[in-house]
Amino acid sequence: MSTAFAPRVVLVGNADVLVDYSALVDASEDVVRFNLCRNFGRNTGRRTTVLCTINEGVVCRDAYKKKSWVGWPPAEDAREIWFRGARQGLLRRVWLTLRHPRMRKKHYDYGEKVLRACGMTKKPAVYFGRPEYERARDILQPRSRLARHQLFPSTGFLGLLHAMNDPRWQGREFALVGFDWFAASALRTAGHAFTEEEQVARELVAAGRLRVLPCRPEGT
Image (cartoon, rainbow, N blue to C red; front, side, top):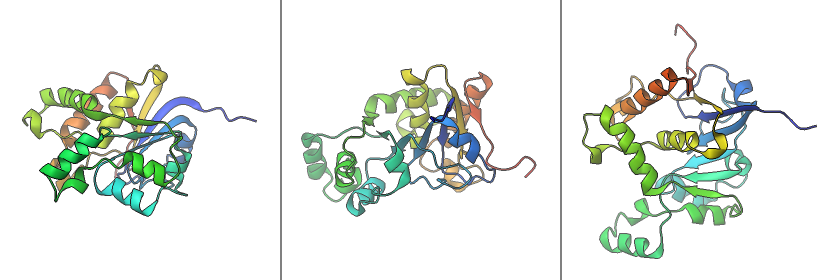
C-alpha cells in the first residue's frame, strides 16, 4: 500500500531545532536537505528527496576522498542531487591550476567525482551555476548596503530560490525548518548575507508563499 504524502516541499537547514517536526517533514512529498545534513534524524525526521550541497572545496572533496556518501541516508535516499556551483570543464580546471596553484583544490568542482566514487552517477545532478548565483544577488542587492560583489548567497538561499522556481513544484506549500540565519551569532555578518536572506524569507511569508517554522518553542 503506497503512502500518500502531503503536497508540500520542506527545506531543512542546519540550525539547532528544539521542536519536533519529524512527523511533518516525513509526511511531506519532497524534502530538501543541505550540505552535511546535521539535523537528519534530529527533530526533522529522516525523509530526503533532494540533497543540496556545495560542490567546491572541503565539504565535497572530503566526501569524494572518503566516499562518505556510501551508506549515508541523505545521499542514498535522495532522488536527485543539487550542486550550488557550476560544473567545471577541463579548461576551467587548467585555468585554476595556473592562476591559483596553491588554492586550486579549494575551488575545484568535485561534483562528478563524488557521484562516481560513491556509485551515484545514475542520480540526476543539477548544477546551479553562475546564472542562479547572479539571480540571487539581484534579489539581495536592493535590501543590502553591501556592494554587489560582496554578496555571497548561501547554499540554503540558493536552494530555496531553485525549489520555488522548479516547475514541478508550482502550487505546492513551501516550509523552512532549521533556518535561523545565525541569529545572535557572529556568523550573522560573516561571509553570507544572512540578514538580507532572512528579510527575503519574511517577505515570502508575508506574501503567503512560505512558512518558516520556529527552531525553538514559543516563549523561549
